[in-house]
Amino acid sequence: MAINPTNVATDAIAYANARTNARIARAQQAASGAKATDSSALLEVSNKLSGRARGVNQALSSANNGVAMTQVAEDALGKVESNLQKLRKLTEKAAQDNLSAEDRTKLQKEAKDLQDKIGKTIQETTYDKTKVLASNAKQTFQTGTETGQSGSVQLSDFSKTFGAVDLSSADAAKKALGQLDSAGKQVDQAQGRLAKAQAQFQRGVDALTQKSQGLSKAQSILGESDKAMQSAADIGSTLRSGGGFAGFNAFGGVDASQLRALLGV
Image (tube, rainbow, N blue to C red; front, side, top):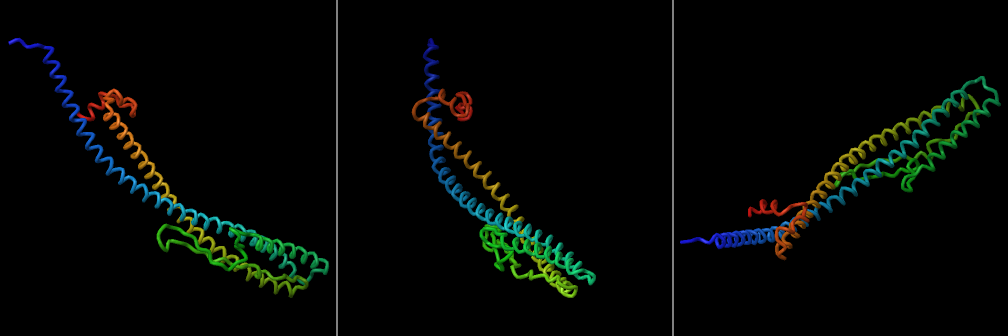
């Protein structure tokens, strides 16, 4: 019996097309179910990541405020300490018995100028409307996202620490030296508290910054996953509309032969 090659070829092509269409239909069906499930899961994860990121960024802002406030207070105390040291040297000179009245008058004027500078620094140094050197308030800042993860610093009110320095006599100057030494100790103690608090706030900033960067990376990866799913949905739409394999060049440079290999058809 003679066999018509044309009929054989036609039958083979029809069989291949039927086989291909069946595989594509199964792939579409599986992809459709997976897309619905995956979209829901992605949305849930995305919402959780967004909420987590908001909490981390809020805590990071608070910890940064803590660092900034302690830096402002420390810088101001540094100025106070510098002028206090200058004032003490003047007072040591005034404690000598061999000074004339004119010398004491000059020293007294210089001492007053230094005291005015100290007082100005104390009254004018503020952070977020708080006079950080003229307040006994306890300032608390977040250092983490969990309950209880916070740090505090006790401010000091120096507005009444530096009384008038009397250099009118050697005895008065000697008495003033004791007052200045006491004030110096208070400044040292306040600087220690600020340095300790600032270190705690900075550790919080460092840890929260790492968390924020990690969350940003996770959100970026999630975004790429969402884009990939959208591309899959577009491919499915093209298949359903009858566009065939030739329409896949627009999807990430995947050509017909590559798609056939991926689908196993």
